[in-house]
Image (cartoon, rainbow, N blue to C red; front, side, top):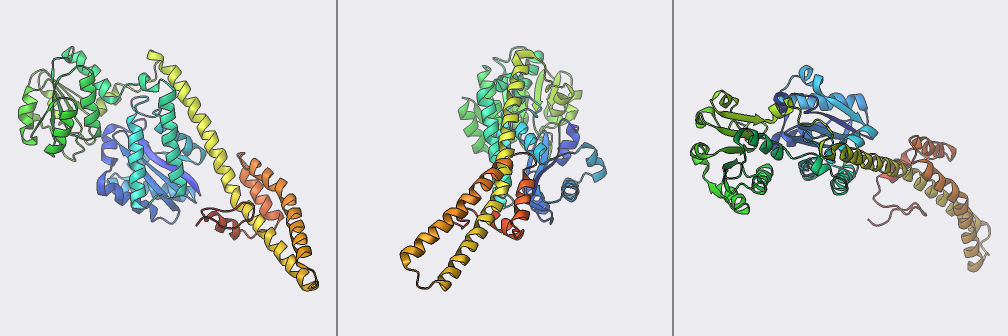
Length: 439
């Protein structure tokens, strides 16, 4: 089994297409189960955000799995496969691991180094766990990617090197409105991105913050965290008329802010939703400025220029990713040979027991003390003979061609190919005896 990634992101597809492919709720759940039903897929997880849609799967056949995942993405998004294929990327085995670790570290984000992706990957992991589409391989890989992402943000300046989408939006807002301190800000939505938006506004010195959400209680709770006030969703048009700066990210499937809600005057709207919250037609209104994910993409805000030590931070994170990928792959290759080593020791133990049984039959007069001494001697001899090759094969297995050593071991000792696979499904195995323990 190997890990496969099939996806598209802001780097390979326009926002309009990402908007069509992005899935959430029941649609995302259906995609997970549909992909897993394919006979070449064992495990599956999907990351679907405002600037990426990726399916991670453990598969046993590369080409068949790529076809299966691509077709499911097309079916569930409604985007024809021939149109979708032009924007898809595929990563497999080592490259899939490197990609996920880079994603978790913020190296592949629209805004370099943004920390939102860690929460998004964590949510994807939780959903797959709840739906039963995740197994030990992807679970360990994704958990490790979260640890790598946290390490990257802790040990480097990648957080400072790339501002969040909200921070970039506020910078653009100040170009239009001037200093935003003293301005009235309206936050539409009460999810994680809206909470980040409200907190960023507060840190920027905005004291007049209004939160509007379909579920009023959530709007109240968010407003209280930033010393603002909550308004009813039905009052959205009135609040828009009084706001200078609007940030919207509701997760709704339809437009929330329509053109007829917005008055022609100086107002800045930041639409961070996918699909769009704000009707693009508002751009035609005098004085109205609308910035959304598509315009941010067109402006190339993810360019890796050297301002603010960005190049140094990127280099540091890439070094961490490379180190962690090497460690993960080394451990994973070593784990692959473990079932073969256990199967070998198990076979040796069976041979010892058979020979001891034959000895007992031939020398029934052998007293218990002598029989115990002979038993221990034979077992020590076998253990010593097997120790060096089993230790060595585990060391060699950490190399890129490590699987070949396990293969050679199975061939040399005529191990049943089914035995290592059976042993591999056991949660815990005593490496000395080859017996299952702890279950």
